[in-house]
Length: 504
Ligand code: ADP
Image 1 (spheres, helix red, strand yellow):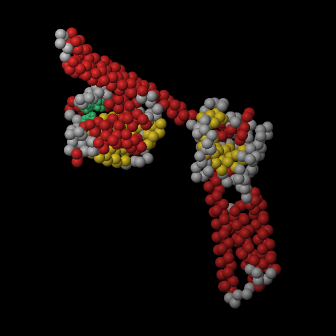
Image 2 (tube, rainbow, N blue to C red):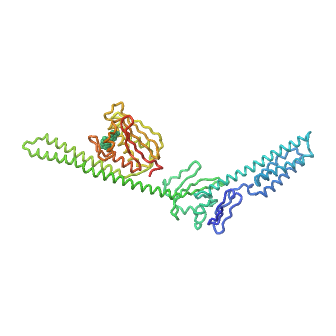
Image 3 (tube, rainbow, N blue to C red):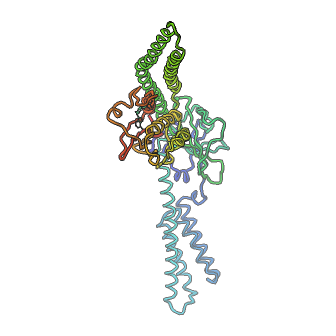
């Protein structure tokens, strides 16, 4: 269904047709398309092809007759037969083959050298078979090439991407598909450089030369100065006759994808802030209580010191003990505040592509001294080594450090030979699934219920903030953190983070 383009070109303009009908420049516009490279044989067309083939067959037959068939020139008929079949189709090729054979049959009759008439007809039959085969093969080859052209151009014309072929040296547009004609601005001219001036390049990778794939194609992100739309431009060489400067360029509209990416980033940031605020609110509420406790103890001991100082006989050892207790409680209060500050400092969430396996390896390396000191062996099973995440690597490493540290703490009473931590990372349902399993006492009902609540701790010096923070970090990444009893013994902590392509 040819439609008229705004440049006045027939929009359906197949390479096969280009081969036969050079595109004429459009009046009033610079020439958009020039004749594509053609073989001389393709320029002949069916009529002239047939005439030329007929003349050549007569010439060969005449020469064969004149030389008394000594030189067996009849084999030269193959060229005009192939020419007829190529330019005018199978029937024309077959007719040329038949004509060549008849000519040979009629003229050779006079100089028949065979002892038996049957051999003379046998040679004619063999010759006809050979000629017909060449005619059929030539026509078939021509048809196959046209169909390949047809398929290629159908794909290009129906593509929603703009495709054009440009002569980079002469700055000429050689071919443009309908989508390209739609987005081209006629006022800006039709040369590739004039068209490309309508776009500005997104700054990507600084001044470094763009990377090329195996076919020599490179990609760049462009922004249209007219409509503000974003395009991915792929540019690479295309064979075009003997001209080495011809480039194929494909512009794909990626505006929706880019907008979705920006929206996703904003969404992630908002979600992260919301998660942080929720956790901070929970922490603030319980922190008051937590800090209050050491402050009350300090107040009690300073009261006691006051009384000891007022006593008639000053007991220096008792005062020193009370002051020591004050000091320990002050240090505990300071450490609570320090942990909170640390958490707030890490609040800046900077997602970037990172490899899941590398995050686990980094967490293990961080805790290597503690693992060695506790005599704990680490098994690491990585079923998908190339797993890529969109995550804040430092925060994610910190989550795993917390989980492994808890596992170390949980195995204090485990017999030395059973002290093992099994780490795993695998892809499942668009997520990277991390698992940290230990051989500790596992989780009782109270622990299962409360471990993620801020300040739940069963450790003498524990703060109970680690898992609450870990869960809020997981959720800020659009992921989850949960715990289960291990099948045999101990606890398993599961962390699920969306993979790079599915990250929110
Ligand atoms: P903290 O380590 O300061 O206690 P966490 O939030 O990291 O704070 O842990 C909270 C509590 O969860 C721990 O005190 C412990 O009772 C329980 N817990 C955490 N990890 C494990 C584990 N691997 N096995 C058994 N209990 C655990």
